[in-house]
Length: 182
Image (cartoon, rainbow, N blue to C red; front, side, top):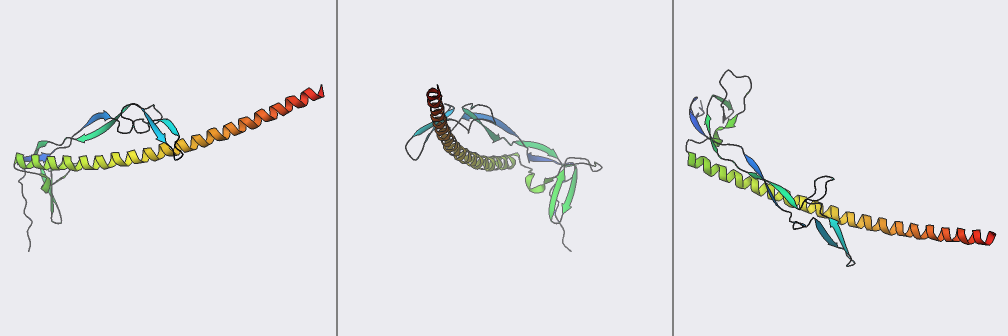
């Protein structure tokens, strides 16, 4: 018969990489804080656009973007209950008779503060890499949107200028016809 080792005793205080984050503001990487980007089209023409990377929804650009920074730090954790799921050992700070509780894997608990601090640094680095990937994906998406917007509105301007020229020609023809009729 196999036995599963229980690493920590009920009531023992250990260290857990607590959850924490903060928001930091940095200059927008697309517009460099100017709130405007210049798109150079294939034909060489330049179009100035409001920066989509530092604008939130329909608000105007702000010149800065928010970045979430993981700030996990060791926090004391007192084991109040243990549960087993196959070979996985989980702990909760809730007392054994609690009806609701949050569990923590035993692998995320440490007797040594220094070991927990190292795990916090590792988790903070993982989050920073994920956040960097997310920000890069947002930048690429926003750049595609700005290129589409410049093309769309450029086409709209040409269509409206053509319609205006046609309307002016019809108006001129109507005035000429009116003058002949007098």
